[in-house]
Amino acid sequence: MLIQPNKITALVGLSGAGKSTLISLLDKFYQPASGQVQLDGINLEDIDTQYLRDHIGLVLQKNHIFQGSIFDNIRYGKTDASLEEVIEAAKKASIHEQILQLSQGYDADALLLSGGQQQRIAIARMFLKNPPIIFLDEPTASLDAIASEQIKHSLDQIKQGRTVIIISHSLSQIIDADYTYVMKEGRIAEHGEHDALYHQDGVYKEIFDAMAKSLNIEKIARSFEEDAEEETHS
Image (cartoon, rainbow, N blue to C red; front, side, top):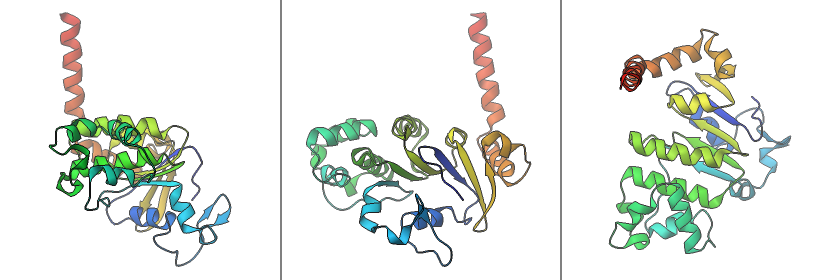
């Protein structure tokens, strides 16, 4: 498996396929039982763990939000950041306005926020850190449709010129990837660009079609077509 620098790589697979475990290997949370993980040709075991993590932005399905202020939780991404920098990061993560509605604002306890709001705090933390490598494990999983689209727009901005690895069940985020690895039972089953993978009629097509079916893509498409026809006749 080769992850290209400054490209978006998607990891696709059913639950239990090993996607999140692979992210943990890349971030040195786990050590490989065999073989090597290399960064620019250097064995990850020979790279200082703190140095590695200082250069990686990580947004998981469930992020580490600690008891303390919202300000301190966002600032965890860059401990010497100013209030202005924290606010800018919060704006990019579409959480600033919601924070201002709290009686204590940025001094409010982050643990009192909803799961979706905590996810945005984690994303704001990543914007503040501004790392060259980003790992995203279902970054919009706990958000509603509108919030997900807002976060996707923000993530699209920070993805530019960075090495990004994303695990997602979002069709739009998978299609946006430059290259995709399909995992099955802990192994790489298929890999390639979206169009080529889809026309292999293999695991990727099966998963992609299931995602589209769950969203009822055909009905959604018909709704758009009807709207377009109405606009044409009006």
